[in-house]
Length: 148
Image 1 (cartoon, rainbow, N blue to C red):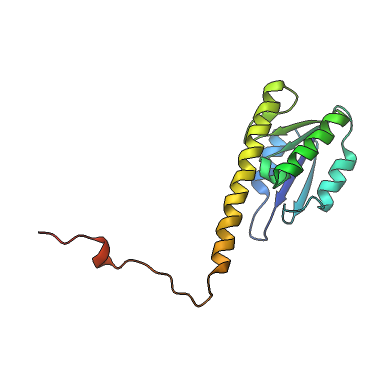
Image 2: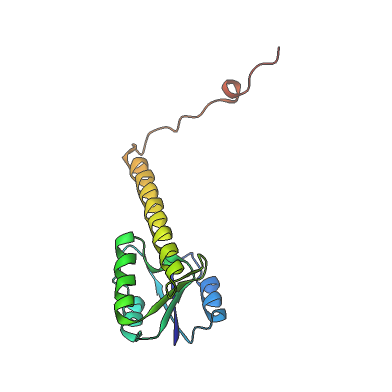
């Protein structure tokens, strides 16, 4: 059986695009969470994991909807493999039922972890700045050379 999993992190995000893509992919049942992906303790995700059985396929719209860290992704994938469960990510076109799909999964998972590290570093530096600090910008006169 094909199962879908969708997740949105904030209230202003809409899961409609994910849900439509999962339906089009043939998911008979879809689980949906509306919370951050930084934790694996999401109610719908836990229900999904309990439901999955040998021969089932879990489909997500995008890799980062399932997990936000390489460690969590690899752990979930290993669990799926041991239980005979296949995994597909529609956006990245990953299908772990093939050797090529397993290779692509690990490459994209590493890139997703790298991107998360960059985002974390950016937010940390921004938070380190004083809330009263002025943003320094060049004036128009400094950026446009004078005509001779």
